[in-house]
Image (cartoon, rainbow, N blue to C red; front, side, top):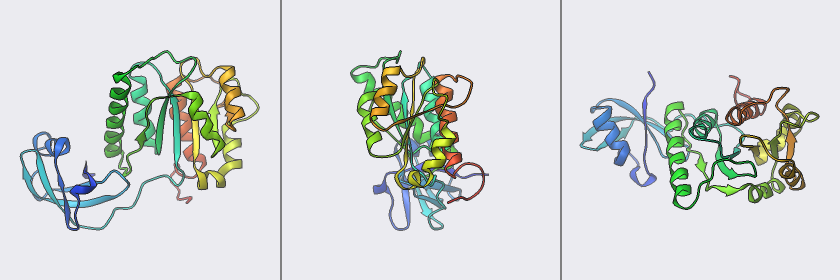
Length: 255
């Protein structure tokens, strides 16, 4: 049975253990109803995971004594940033959740030419905060120690400029000559050193003008095969293929 995992602020960790409080403390004491003596794991959100034992449980808080050193990391050898154009309704939540489970390092939500969803003002900040909570919950579920950062919602053009700085690919259904596998195999060592940006479009995909702008910034357009995937499927499948090809998913240690 896997350990219950709880995220704490770095300030709540000392040399011997940690204090779990706030929403996590409430969940531990009031929802899970854990008691002293039970084994848990503590995450600091930056990659560290420590096994421990509950020594005190109060109303909305608990004290953990560490019982061992830092647990082995479960992070990919290549940091992958998913640049995902907004998709409708709960589909964006699904993409974020599954991307975190697969091993994404960062997610940048963007607005593109064909984006249907429009978020303005406070709704932008509220939605990003929601996505960050989803990311934290997904980390606890899948056993990761690093909580990926969800960046503020941005326009696609501003993020395309990052393609001048490190390897970047854009999934484009009209691309037939350049496959994702072909690009990744050519860039394997470079991606391990610099990371990778993966651009995924909204319903309707990226426009030809956006693809041209991407190419001018050094972003390479690639296809995923003969079938056209839904926007939310493309992001999840694309990320899984990237991490498999770069030596993370698949069951073997290719680091």
